[in-house]
Image 1 (cartoon, one colour):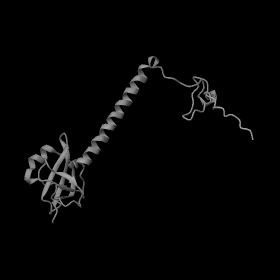
Image 2: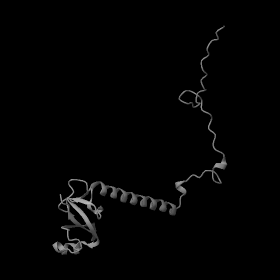
Image 3: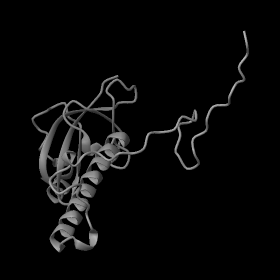
Image 4: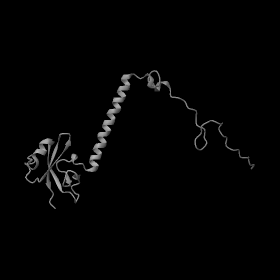
Length: 164
């Protein structure tokens, strides 16, 4: 047998893109016009946008921002145990408005169970009633109540102590 000399692999011409293994890539061919809406691909030229479309984009951006703030605020409230997220059946710890927060009812530190939630209570009315607040009177085992809200309206949580 005769040996044939090995020839080195051919290198693609300079400037031709290749794969990492050195194989030349096929030339780019744009898709046929039938793949685009009538008139070809649409490009948005910001200089030619109408004031109405610019205003709509800003409005949509603002709405998206507000939704994101609400979602982040809700997640933050849940993560921190803010009492404003509590509802009937939830458990709380704390003895004052500064330290009360929602905890899992299986938590050994849980001190209160929310027996009821009285909605739309004005803060002025709640403060004026003080120890004589009657919104939780339907539950004789309630020993404390907690108001939380935004502005002047909020909800009152009727709290029963957890017996340990």
